[in-house]
Image (cartoon, rainbow, N blue to C red; front, side, top):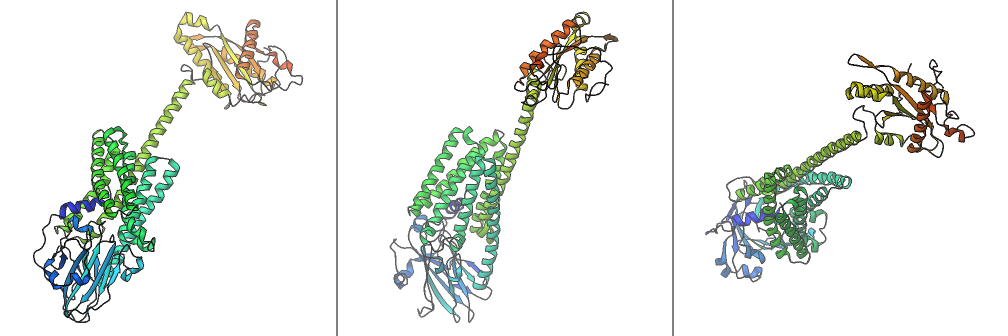
Length: 606
């Protein structure tokens, strides 16, 4: 889950290891490049009663018997007080240039004394550095704490080192050839820069997505990625080098506060990404670990570094077990996001296992020891980013499918299933943008004459065939913006988007009447109906569909009673200029003698 898991695993795996029983000086030759000292017989560690001893005290002959070979990881209680180490080395060549460096940057105070030659003469001033001091106190501008050793001749030398680092899982030392160390440092910086670049790119990309999508998982991912980036920068020493090197107060606290915030954001991301609310008890446990992680960060701010570190280590292991348990349960339930989560966490566990094996000397892979953790973290963030993208893509696909389904349902609700025309609901929706003030709208209401005998004589299948044929003839004669609807058993509506003048409307009515009176062939028989058409024109100030339907209905019944085929509603006579109705005819009239008239109506039946 977080980088502190590595410290927990290392402590559990290596702390029980026994101490070496014999000490031997380290022989340095021209072929020596890098030597990891902890767990070897070359580095001595002072076992004492816990009192803070001075250099003079630890260098007394009486203390020599208390130095034993330093283990790879010190017992936990030993990390809570200053630790003294002694390195004795023999330089075979006449001259040498070496650096004695710590393996951790999370040390509050570091003192190097020496080297002392065989006569006890010190050859260089002491080095005093650590998180409690400005970054400028570090020799060679190195992120790690080190002392440069440059004996002027072959011989035996002794160096004493005092380390205070209760908030770090291991107090390790290594000795390097200076040129090799500087080269390794450049390679390490390059690798770290690549990891930082990956995290920064993921951070920026997902921050943009979080702001646009407003998805909680993206927000928590951004928080986790930012905390991971700052924590790695703090652990590697780059944060102190480039961000807060002149602020020792924060340098000390950042190494425990930032991991605590990382654990908190990780718990929030896990809950959101896996949707652990489905698992009530595990979800409550994740919430609890998040609260405890926040408490650890507050302890770190208060200066309780050891307590905060111990709490972070415990939360890292317990929180990961809780998150893995939740992911496994959800995976069994078929949740695909659980597989992504386990993949991301699996890389982190493999990195921790590889580091343990390297420390056990099972593997010879110093790269894993130095870079495995942050590489796993970068890969974890990449996997989580891909998982989020996949999740959002899946959600978008589901939303599109739901929207299409909703559109289909809405269309079905507004469509007459027999004819495919709009029904009353569809007519209302289609009329809304057409019946606006100032528009020249006209509505034709068509009622079929003689339709009931066809149903009674030939059956409903014949009646349905007639209705479908009428719908097709009306649809063929409508323009693109017009609305054609079936609003009753044998009642149809043609709503004209832009009504023409009276002559064109009358011509249209005549031609529709002729078209609708043509026989419909069904099972070898010509079925024929008539039609009565009522025409209403919208007046300025009253463009309601209900008004037009009522007026057209009155006109239609007038046409039916007079057998004129069509009729106009007389509402236009209230407009003295004859413009409000779109130049509709004044008075309720029917003019059946225009069957041969053409022109004036785009799309009319020809």
